[in-house]
Image 1 (tube, one colour):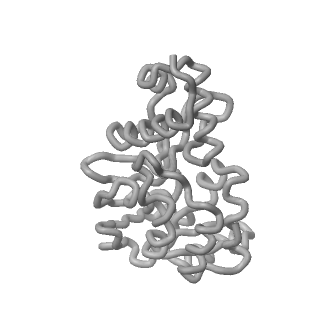
Image 2: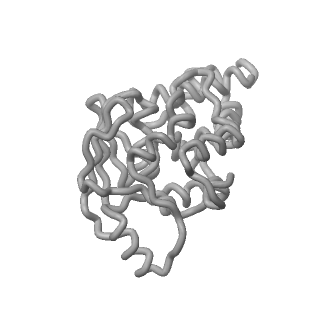
Image 3: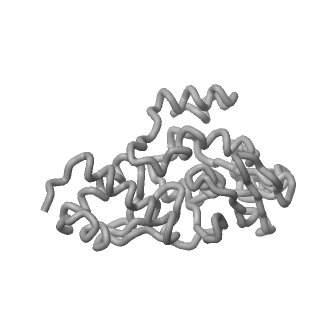
Length: 228
């Protein structure tokens, strides 16, 4: 069996994303073993390396892929229809960013976190074609420096849709939360570009902290909330 090189880890990452794009679900570790001729320990080590590099997140205590950003391995409130297939995203941000990863026209189907009103966002060629409700927004509750402290909590509970700023304000008042940042779907597309637009490439790597910080600033996203 081959040794676990950086090149093989990169190929495993590409295989995971290609598998999800084709099948809408992540591969299991046994499929990775068979694909690359790896024993279980080496396949798991590859997954751990990918998790450390923030490409995937595993179900805690297992060898199963929970997240391969922007894709979710489980059903979530963030459903995406693209290319005749249905995917699930990890959060509101990921559901919009999936358009860049798949490079396909998509429709996001989700809910207002406050009232459960249905939210539909149609995206084509990196532009929002339509949004219902028209004023739907993406709310990021945690500052950027906190996102990766517990990415499952961040995605599952702190990056959500609201049907309007009014509903966000009502929800924050009801639950006693302050702070956070609200973005339009258009802003979210622009925010996602350096992270998600080349995910399907074999040589993909996440942008450095400095590059991401510069990108945030280029979009006018400044202040303590956006400091990595």
